[in-house]
Image (cartoon, rainbow, N blue to C red; front, side, top):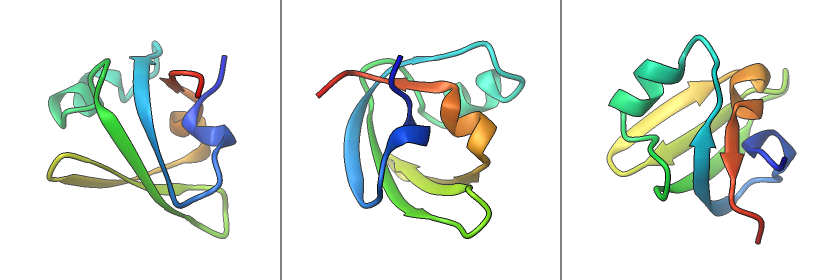
Length: 73
């Protein structure tokens, strides 16, 4: 399984699914849905990411990034 955690920003990928993580419902409300294009904008010094989907920009931790499964390129 490849996830956002494995990417080096900047990158744009297609979301395959949001795994069963605590933030799942909130991420889906923000537009993180299967088939959506995810723009990985930057990575923080502690391992978190700044990602965008549509008009939503959100900072996520490394564990959450691991739950965002992407389509293999």
